[in-house]
Image (cartoon, rainbow, N blue to C red):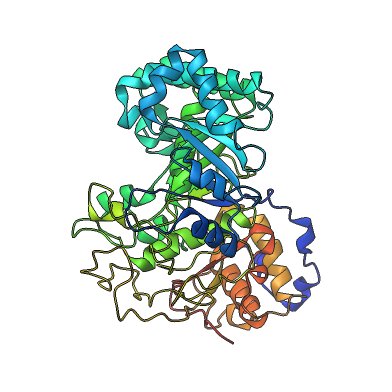
Length: 492
């Protein structure tokens, strides 16, 4: 869309600049991490807890209720989600006494010293334990009843992570619908349960799978939250600028078909991007993993995690995973989702606290906003090939990465215009280059002009996360944005 004439940055219009305080983003969410332990070379739980605290990670999700881990997390203030494994669903569903005993031993015995805030009953049951599908909601109900009996039901919520394979249709987002064998028999009772207990729907969503299997049709920028042309959903008239948003809105559409569940929050219980994969796993690289997880984290922490269908929703996200896990079966990517190597050195940088530089982790940890040297095109990296330990290969150079501030098209042109006028007015950005006829006037779009202005402001103000927010209208990227023939500087 051409930039409206009223948005041209003539001096007379700058007086009408709107203060950023008028632009109210959604409440910020929290970025947690999944702590999986399918490996034989991980640090002990006490060392892991120190790593979590060092990184400012305040929420962690487990795949069991391991006593040594729960004891290590005691008195740290870190909030924890524990899990009742799939193989125990049948017992929990059929015997209330089993559910009560399980909650006593695995939750009540540690709470409140260990801040358990949720119980994941099973994990991707529809995909990995299909024979237990009918037992899922009864098991959830019995676990909740056990919490209620112990007076813990207000503090600790019960849910179950659902994989996107629960959807029969996910594209376009407006056509999202649950599989017929799940919709009425399982998902509707589950949503009723979540609504009645004040809990949340847990969704495991991985744009990597969709991109890797359809790289010829899906833009990498679209998958990594980088500036892109967007995808119009003709069914709902909304335009999508990120693949994760499209996936989540497909879930929302499927939920809406079952009733009015707008009061049920969604927590992204797993999402991530692998830093290494097999030859056929297109897009698996440290650069792309850093871009996906880093850009997502910044969106969530800035209160800008809403989707086109639910723009004002806040959202908590659990990145998968804390460590590379060398004993996971399957393709190479399954063993390379970690933000950290088992020796606690970073695979790449992710900020878990907005505006806080990531501190070094372990010997040789990277500093600042760097991470592994990135490929310019964001393509697969060959660095690290041949490493089988799950630790970083020798000779990997850790460098300081560049950063740019770009417009978030999801917020709409009105909010972009207000933030654009602020940046070029009292914000002090140099916007001469986006005047008519100037070097960066083309492409003449709101997103392109706002990106230029936001980036100039960001670079002048010291490139801190707080100077690339604009009440949710902007976010930081670590790959050079594509704005026609105009190059956005990474320094001024």
